[in-house]
Length: 250
Image (cartoon, rainbow, N blue to C red; front, side, top):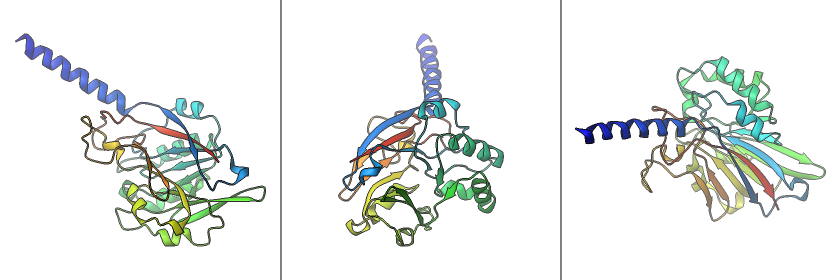
């Protein structure tokens, strides 16, 4: 009988741990070397957050991130049932870090997309829907490129790259599968993605989706973030919630 009670206690302890892992407020600080980064963009900082889902972004995240040159939301800002008031509050908090850019994820289509787009833009954020935005410093330029969701068939890398002004391009995509479509001619050096939640619940090396982390591909560096929120069950194991403050160096 004692073993039964120990099993129950261990199970409750594991569930509590998994709940805590799913609600962490962690900012990972990374320094990434970009060979084609223009001199003026040395130490350029990007705050990246994906897969917010139902969570309210903690003030702890805002304080730890301080100021960044820009903020990128890598899709799944919402899911079914999330109010536009929560979207407003989250965008306002992220705007305290820096100017905000957003790309669509699959769960963003669970709500009224026109209302979501209007809410995002009314809070001063920019939506990159198969589009790009040129960032200028002195005489130097880099391009921030955003694609729509690949899993729903809405992504067009060709459209997103049109009229890019530089040979240094940072691609934002909710789904890391976009990495397979990139060629050397695209001049993309860095790709920031989420979607997989790092598998959300992993047992050692085993998980239902791609592990979170940095990957050095043939033509670019790829980030797959575990994301900030969780879907279905608010539980995580070996794939804790995370956000990123990325410093670019030459």
